[in-house]
Length: 373
Image (cartoon, rainbow, N blue to C red; front, side, top):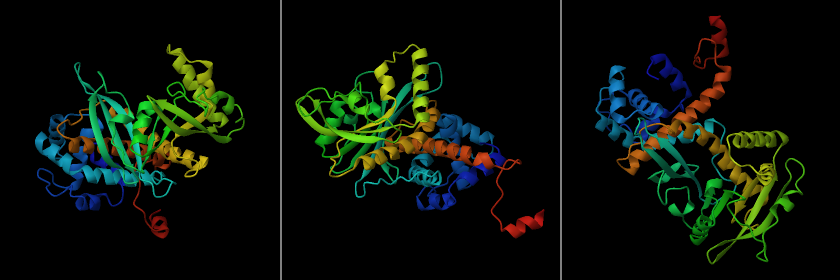
């Protein structure tokens, strides 16, 4: 990313109004040490994309002739760039074909996730980042940085603060009774990928819910159904639904291959796990009167679309120096990582049709293009 040619290619992938966003978001109130917005963004992407510390990034930017700044100045510019980086992420997600608006109109939507980063060096620390993004703006409204060891550091819904009426989307790592109870206590609702072995489902008579028996009725790809269930957390009884859809033959085959690889690595994979892998299973507290089965599944599909980018984000975030000075710099660092993930996703898409000379030509009328031949 230090080469000028490489930077020009990257600029073609950015939102067309990225410079205007930089000015309107306040990211360039002070460009001390940077000659332009281009120099600022290049340096920030070196920091988050390469996983270098602030000090190492400042040194490398100087050697590359991009900017001459101190690590303290770079940290301040990173803080100022929080909104700018977030707005570019929002536009790139739309460019990648993902609509960040839930079909359940009128409900504020939050998406929860976590990832582990390993800082470089023999004694590099491991950190777990817990974050919440509001859709469709991608506003990071909560950011926690914890160790990966000790009590209270795992993925759990209870660490987040919820508001009445909002809809929370989360993956199977958050499917625990206590966390679900925390969402319900705040009068919010939840759509979470079901972890069948982590959540005990009961029927209306407090007996184990026969999930596998009900799933057996979904024989064809695209068959779907929902069933009311109960879960318990301490003395609390929580009403919910299981919304299920049978996967396509290809999706089932992929899931089974992943389980086989998991088994070959020494982990236990039972027949019930393989059976559950044939379906997408979502637990929700949304009553049937407020959301149909397809609306619940579509809401979770929104999370899955975002998850595809998160998978790339997690691979990029695994190594790097996360700023631990304050929440603002940490959130900006997260947006920067997310921007790199979205750029790589867009590059993979446009790379299929990129020209043999390695870059895209500016858009021009067809007649002008023909005149140059």
